[in-house]
Length: 88
Image (cartoon, rainbow, N blue to C red):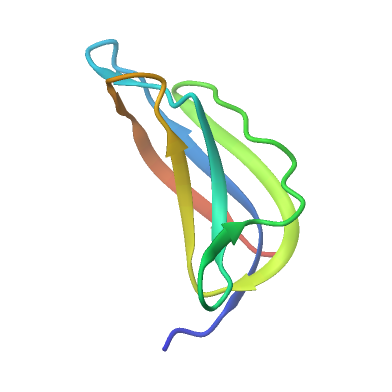
């Protein structure tokens, strides 16, 4: 079983290729609380800027898993290229 890590910031890189891969309408970061995914506490906001990293800071939390929950802006795919997570 993986050990929990303390995290308090993440950056997610979205891209739009103008050919069917689009930006998300919205996104949020969730952490595993031991039995379910829940929104990270105290999120600073979730910017959606294309072709760059979008940063969110949040209250430091210990978790073994994170996920990015994406909401599509229509019928096209969402372009998530990379995610980085940082601890305090």
